[in-house]
Length: 476
Image (cartoon, rainbow, N blue to C red; front, side):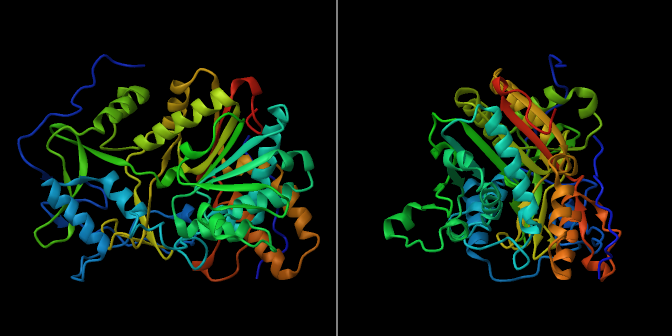
């Protein structure tokens, strides 16, 4: 049971060098066994087992280190065969980023492509699945930005990686009474998974809607409020020319990252290879790789003093490129973007994790059966947006607790608690804590392994907007 005495008070706390030394010194060898002090390292091809992770909550915010693992002989899946054929065809290892991209979005066997990975029956739970309040308050932010934009008669509302469509459903439902805002919306869902597109379509369509074969193929629909919704595989497919509001919640963390390790010969890219026993292993590239150009950019942004203290670095070229694309669209058409994800406002050293059925597993075990994600480098997003256009401004990041608290989540949960059953009240309190709390909920009296873990400080919120619109709420 959960005590009714839970306090709902706000949880708010309101240079470039000419050269970069020892970035890479080539070696004549094909590849070197990967070694480091990290939990995923290998020394001369043998595993160094990390300590098992402690029991954690099922939301992704509480995840830390993977447990010990072993590669037991088993029949290779189609994805494993595909990955091994790529490595064999190349005559050498592939980057961690390419491995990650194949594991998540391979058209036949990718983790996100053919299954529903969200919710209690999936592999992880996201904020929209935790509580309706999340989508409602993102809706408040969206309407405020629309007003700052001058209440345009038409606006493209774009969601990147919409999950099950829960966030958009809550946003549209809670905004339905604001007729002019709803009338202006043309919603675009950017989703590469046909399975998730279908789930999103079922979440958002009218109850009495009959979908023709042509509409089913093109994935377009209207909500109960009459808002038209379209589906696309990439942001490029979303029409230009109209003011645009973009929502990216837990999207950037799934973009493929390149990992680098400092070695005696400089910064070397971490790669995935096949060992003699036919299992996957990490090695270090003996020669400079294309991703080194992005690493050099990251080094210029961060400064050599910070870089000199690191042994590992992650860089996400696709996040940089997507941010620049978003910034240029906002610069030309007006509007803004809201990015909410777990990450840091600094260089990320070594954060790539794999999770299957709410538990950590090794990154290389049974590819395609677990989600892979990495911390988002919000500092890199800021630099990428500012480099792309002088007409946009970047605000934040602030913690998710600060963001939701400033938008009124405390008043919202109090209002909802006035008219609900005991079971609903317990769900509301638990959801509230997960959204804005920090660590284990102090009011929890159930089993320790089911205690709600707050993601309020682990998740960050950042906004990119056209300068003409001023500073968006609540980043003043």
